[in-house]
Structures are given as C-alpha cells and as structure tokens.
Length: 131
Image (cartoon, rainbow, N blue to C red; front, side):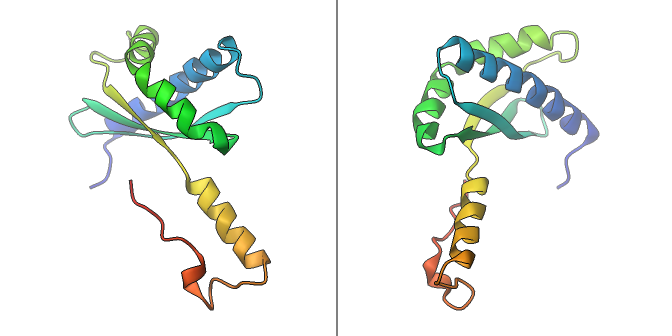
C-alpha cells in the first residue's frame, strides 16, 4: 500500500528535524569524525509509529551509536516534539534501525571489481537480511 500525502509530509518533517537533533547531539557529546544521516523515515498509517533508518559513518561505530540512540529515544522524541509542536498534534513513537544498504552496495561493487564474480557464483555474496 502506498503512503498517503500526510504520511510523506510527516516523514519529511521528522527526517529534517532528526538530522539536526542527532548531529548536534553527536558534536556536543564530543564525537568528532562521526556522521549520522537519516536515510529514511517511514510513518505508519495511523501516524503512531515512525521507523527511522540511520546511516552511520564510520560503520564500525554503528552498533554502539544505535544502542545509545535507542536508549535516549524518549529525549529525542521530546526534542522533536518541541520543534514540531505547530505542525503535529501527536508525536509518533520513534524506532531506530541501522540502514546498511550503502555497505551492501559497496560489498557488491568490491566483489564486481575483484577476481571473484558474484554474477557467475552468487554464493560469494551474503544473503541480505530483511529488517
């Protein structure tokens, strides 16, 4: 089922504000050289939940950062609610996930450039997990 215009609008508002909040929190927390990007936000039909997909560079710190972000989700939700109080009546509950699509594409690219050809031998590439 396709997203409604309202879902798309809320997702774009959340995405824009989440980028600011997360990047500011990272720099104020003393994390230099870490880039947090909100790659996608999907809002449910009833507008009560929002799945937030984050790309974190360098990817080695991804699991550690996503755990910190999940533990601070109520604070992040409050900050976003303050920013969007004139645009949203109710703030959706935020669920954070790591977006590993860039790593997956890079793995395919590296495999194509290497001596092993995943087109001829598909068992070379790991199966992509659905989240």
